[in-house]
Length: 449
Image 1 (cartoon, rainbow, N blue to C red):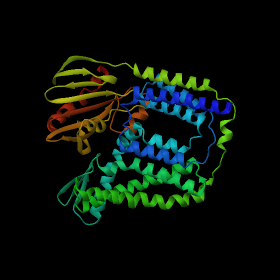
Image 2 (tube, rainbow, N blue to C red; image 1 turned 90 degrees about the vertical axis):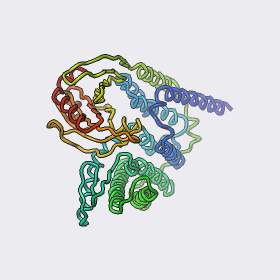
Image 3 (cartoon, helix red, strand yellow; image 1 turned 60 degrees about the horizontal axis):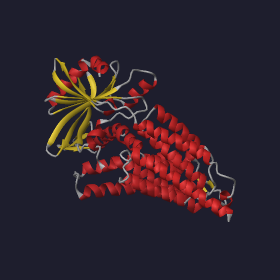
Image 4 (spheres, rainbow, N blue to C red; image 1 turned 30 degrees about the vertical axis):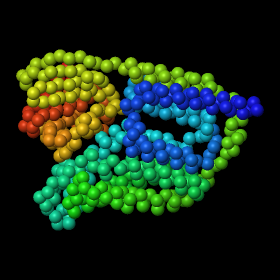
């Protein structure tokens, strides 16, 4: 009877902790994680499949407690929501491993894949891949004898223009592919009673990533070659068929072979023995909870700058607004300019392809162009009948680049902080004029704001 009462108390304490972490999540991360997105829901399904397929009921140790405390300390010194997200999840994992069972590595991968930072990485770092796919498809079409060429994300094919846009469904299928692969691995591991080492799982996920790239390459080629336009049934059907043929089928066929060849026999533990093995050190959970709450409080009180003013120069007068996170907004009748300081090499950069898309705009004709002797990214923003021309680059007054890895590596080595400069105008001529002015005065701009 005493054991049963003790078990009930443990469950109530665990429930209180989880509810507390849920409250922190709702307080600080409700606007950070889109729980209604398809990726999040698919990730939760993958998590349930992985947990239900796990035959190892052994309780975990202190690995997540240590990781949660370290993440909380990092969050206190670098109060960004990504780190708070990691801290809260690690704290919840510690509760689960203490009271339920050891969390399999596939569960952690599923949680990582549905995190906003993963979506950000997919959006931003896949951009060069989209440009590369465009060039490849242009080359494939030329090889067939067709009159075609590629510039940026635009393919010209027999006089028609096709755009490989960021909003294209095929570009968003990588996370779906990886989550599907995780579920297939979990089910096959349960079927054969074997488990894969983390390194084998990572290699298999890289194989899925390669399949996804091949899927997009073939999909774009088919859409352009047969001139299948967006917003049509055939456009969507083509994407689904390519996804099934080039991703799902190879994964389903290869997963059993990989598990039978490289999997190790799964260990089974008696869950009843785990429940009765000693007292739970709830003081450890208290320390983790306090660290997690402290990280949330620091994040909540992150400094916000809200001020306005005027700045005059030989290019006219701008109305200047200092927004949150140190972002400076400058505007006049001709242009809208955002100066977005980047905190460190680890930080997100408020990428235009994320921010403008979130405001309802669609990117078209994105390419690397040359203005004022500097390479910048250019694109056209469309929303209904409205059309804007935009350009962006990274600058710290000394170095100028459009490459993500370049400015991150530079800041990691101790360079001056970079800013993302995003200039938008109503027409291409005005955009070029504004960009040339900023490039000419780049040192003053980057030191003054």
